[in-house]
Length: 142
Image (cartoon, rainbow, N blue to C red; front, side, top):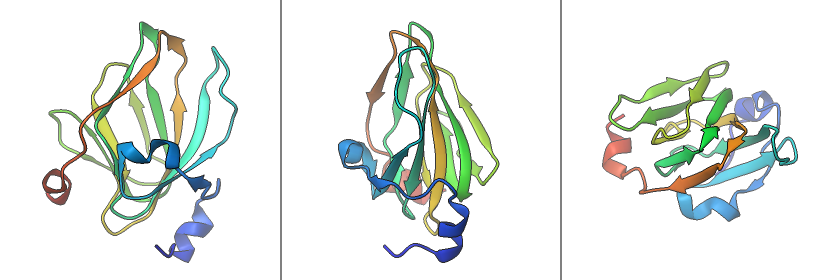
């Protein structure tokens, strides 16, 4: 899909490469640009870009202690939703703090590219659990 030139200009960390390693956990096309190297005990930062309509599956960041994720919205417009709660509209400058153990999803709006820097918060016994896809009906009702 052709990228909007205004979005491309505002996506300061760049598009990155097709997120093929995690494609099975996304509806639509996403791109990943790591900003730091993963190191034990340190946060890991990566810019994730979603084509319009792209979103990840419901998922949970588990941790025995600490952990979770922080989203720093960079460009475009997207959604964040926790299980059982209304979706939250996301725009550049928004920050989402996701504690460990919270079932959630995030992605682009239907008519907008979207990028956020995803920060993996260090913790003990951390792991991601990928769950079901956000249905077209759930997404379409936003």
